[in-house]
Image: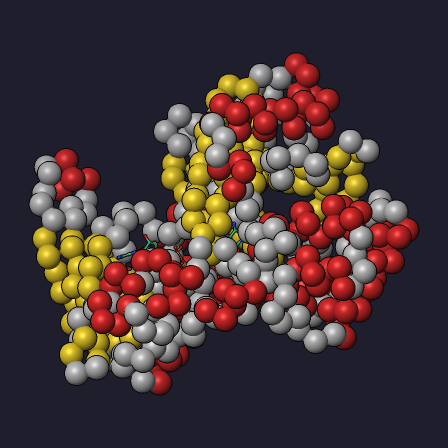
Length: 450
Ligand SMILES: Cc1cc2nc3c(=O)[nH]c(=O)nc-3n(C[C@H](O)[C@H](O)[C@H](O)COP(=O)(O)OP(=O)(O)OC[C@H]3O[C@@H](n4cnc5c(N)ncnc54)[C@H](O)[C@@H]3O)c2cc1C
């Protein structure tokens, strides 16, 4: 079978690799020169270090992702925690969610009990654990409502659930669909002990995608970068390929100002693995008003804002910390994660569901990041910020809410041969790397089944 996959993010790469491994003829079209879509990076010319479009974290439950990376020979880029450990700091000092090496879910219970929390909050955490473990999926309600129904008070929310849920869902509990939190909680915390540990990357995400792409090409797949898919022509109710615009691909071609040329990939099946708002323009106008395409207009975006900062000395003494009660929610020591110790220290701050931060100027955001360092890290007293960058992803993920869950489509469309993939499809997970990879695999299987 000839297959065209549009989009070389995690979803498109997973679909393309899977189909190519099954000996189909796959052409992967990516509009940008760099791979990875919303999980990518570039080499910073000044520091020579990789800068992600926003720091990504994986967890041990990302089984489909790790399987893809293992097949592609990219597993050595992953750094696994032994057991889940998250440091938090606030004005009362440091505390840690430190899960001991016990079988799941005892490891989580012990971790929650060891966290410096008021006893009332510990009991509430136990109550939520029972609700997730034994209760039904909370369909059609927001996370805030689910937490309220299960007796979680303001302290439990502030100290535990809001920081965790906002990072996982990229949405506030007041808006986010509770069922996504419930599903992640079950997969990450209640199944296997190693499912909850955090997983970092030794390099920027673009490196990981390059490895996967090399594996795909090595197996005979065709990758076209800077190839903008324009339309998916449909004849007799069936896709027949993809029309695209091939822009100059190599540096030399770009320098020479080579013109874009129109191209066509002949295909029996097409997997559209692009963001939700990029799907409707690809299909003929008459289809855009029909399900599932019409429903996609209902999905909005939720932003993430990041600040990358270089300090003249080492101030943050751990790979990652949650900054409670601070605009910047998390700080990462990127230098040490990349295996480089000592100054200059390369830090990355991140704010999820960042609607308010997205409206602030770069200067204000950098000042806010610097203020959290001065507030929580005494070593910042004598330190200087030597450089900073602000990265903004306006549509980092789709905005989760209970109604959006009803709109997220599966891989199969009413058009024969056209399949959908992406973190926004109906994966049962929030918009995550693992959701994207699973969606790519689901689309590949559906395409193969015809
Ligand atoms: C700043 C940030 C932080 C995040 N943090 C985390 C995290 O910690 N953990 C986690 O699991 N997830 C995180 N996410 C979410 C994660 O990045 C996404 O869920 C995942 O990368 C989505 O993959 P995808 O393949 O579905 O879509 P995308 O990555 O958006 O891929 C779609 C691809 O299609 C291409 N494309 C679009 N239109 C066309 C066209 N017409 N023709 C050709 N190509 C086209 C795009 O260029 C892109 O490469 C984060 C996202 C952001 C932005």
